[in-house]
Length: 303
Image (cartoon, rainbow, N blue to C red; front, side, top):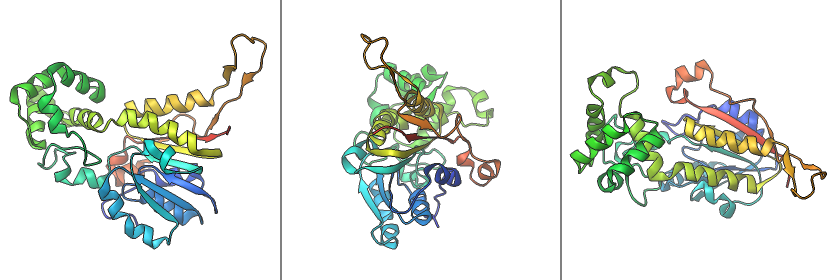
C-alpha cells in the first residue's frame, strides 16, 4: 500500500509507459509518498533511486526502503540534480504535483482549506511565500500572479496584498485575494484564491526552472532505450514537457549549415504517447486531485 493519504496519480499508465524490467535501474525523481517507487519495485526485480527535496519525504520513506532490502535508495535533493545524484538509468519518472502530505498539512502553508503559516517551501529552506508577499514590489507581485497563476485579476489582487501587508497566514491571504475580486468570484466552482496560491508556490519553489533543468538532467542519465515519464498538473508544466519531448522526437537539422547536402540528424527520442494521456473517469471520481493530470512519455534513442 502507499503511505496513508497518498494516492499515486495515473499509476497503471505510469507503469505501462515505464515498463520496468528485472535487473534495471530507475529514478523516481519526485519520491513524495513513495507510490511510484513501490509499484516499480513490485513490478520487477529492479532497483530504484528515490529523490525528493523535502526532508520529511525522505524520512517517511525509510520504512519503505527497509522493506525492499536495498533495492530502494533515497536521496535528499532536487530532481534537477539527478545528473549528480544518479548514475546511468533505464527510466525516470516525475510527478510534478504537490505531495498530498504537503498539501494536507496546514503547517506547510500550501493550502487555504485550513489556516496555517504562509510558507509553501517544498524543501523547508530558503525564502517562504510570506517573505515574498511581504517584500515584493507591486510590479513583481503582478508578474508572478499573472504569469504563474494565469490570473486575469492579478493587478487588483496585488494591490490588495500590498495594502493589507504584512500577510502571514494562508487564511488571511485567501480572504484578501477573494475580496479583491468581488462577490461574484465566490460563485465560481474554483475558489478565487486558487490561481494566486498556485502562482506563489511555483515562484517560491522555482518549479518551472526546476522542471526545465530536471528534464535535461533526466535525458542526460538515460541509457539508450531508457524511458522518461512525466505527469504534470497544469498548462505551464505541460507546455514545457510537451516542447521538450517534441523537440527531441523531431528529425534534426544537418550538423552544419555549410553542408547543405549532408544527412539530417536522426531524432533523439521516440514519443510513447500521442498527445497527453489523461486519467480515467473512475480515477478522477476516486481521487479528484487527478482531474488535471496529463502524462507524456518518450524513449531515448541516442546515447
